[in-house]
Amino acid sequence: MVPGSSRSIKGGARRSTSLALLLAGTAMLAPASLNAQTATTAPATAPTTTTYGAGTAPSAVPAATPAITDPQTTGAVSADDLTPASNEDYLRLNQREPTIDGLRLRTDNPEYDRAPGIRIGTFTLRPSVSETINHEWRKDGDTKTSRGYLETGIRGTLTSDWSRHQLTVTGEGVLQNNISGEGEEEPRANVDAELRLDLWDETIARLRAGYSFEREDADDPNAISNAKNQSAVNTYRLGAAVERDFGLIRGSVGIDFDRRTYGDVELENGTNLSVKYRNRNTGVLTARVGYELSPALIPFLEASVGKSLYDLREDPLGFERSYQTYAARGGIELDLGEKLYGELGLGYETYNFEDDRLGELRGLSVDGRLNWSPQRGTDVLFAVSTDLNPSTTPGDAGSIDYNLTNIITHQMRSDLVARLTNSLTLRNYPSNARSSDETTWRTGAGLTYDINRYLALTGDVSYERTTRDQGDTTDITRVGVGLTLRR
Image (cartoon, rainbow, N blue to C red):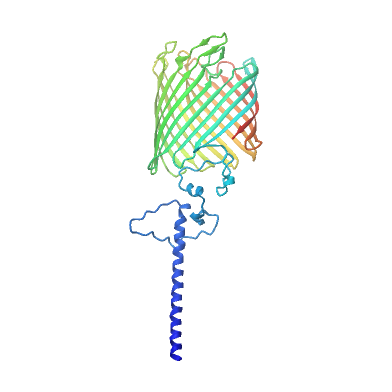
């Protein structure tokens, strides 16, 4: 009995030893399994890619890597637990189109998959239609006029929802119909499209096209006096640009082409006056290079050269108004996130006219946009631009216009947004010009009340004042209220 007991005890000891070794091996393999799981879900938190050669195994993640304990953190969620829509988002260069109200969609519930807008294949269309009733008071010197009019507006944005590349189309059209008083109707339209192509090695190409229509302002220095309807101005735009990052160096080159045509002016006696001698084509080549001091601060240098050719070599008075333009500027790009971003450039521009009698225009140029959000729900835009306004006055080349704009929007409640706008235009002519300098100041305020997500009530009031060194002062006051239907 003793020998048998001894063998039994030894056999039990061997089984206990085997069990202990098995448990120890399981404990040693546990960290590797945890690391393997972390490596599987790592792309959700750090989009790094590891390439393994043939016959080699992936290296284990160091044990010092902290474990993710928050169940709401993306890295703690297994790839098998992600919905197909969420899993696809990690492979996209473009984020999905957000909702109009900015709320996050719940992809795990089909009930919340209905994004606002109209889905057209891989595009999202967000249209809106507005109807407002307005009244305008106008004073030119001692002459006072007023009118009441209906304004119908159609606006829309078409945006692609592709994993790479992006196409964006924006459009706006406004019609006015006088219902009382006297005054010129001011229809306008604008369509712009941009295709962004994500190429290779931090290279992006942009293709642009656009069209705009407007009625020339009766206060414009080139407007025809005693006209019933001023000229209809059509502008066609084409552009292309390539942008590339070379480490800390960023470079871009682009070309833009514009064609502007002018329709006949309808005079008060019922006849039409042709102004087709103002039709022209303009092309500009621009190159830019910047250096990344930090991701938020990028100074840059920019140079451009352009040419403007009129359809008719000479205007009715015998002046050749085609010109060449040269510009150079330096500036800085700023990107501190959604709180503050934009750019500002300062430089010098010259316009050389082919007719020696017109001489040349030259002056300081300031261009830029700055977006600031001091607090949630409040957005402030500052913008400045410099433009050339060719003249039709005999012997005058034109003016250099400086435009400053400020727009403030504030969300007073979840369904109420207030707006405040201000702008200043300085129109400067050469000292020997026959035309006089002008200053135009505009200010306005408005409210938008969302009755629901599809219908909004709007109200606006604005005031505009134009003063001239020589000539009468013009004052315009407008008030309006209307409804906007959007989808």
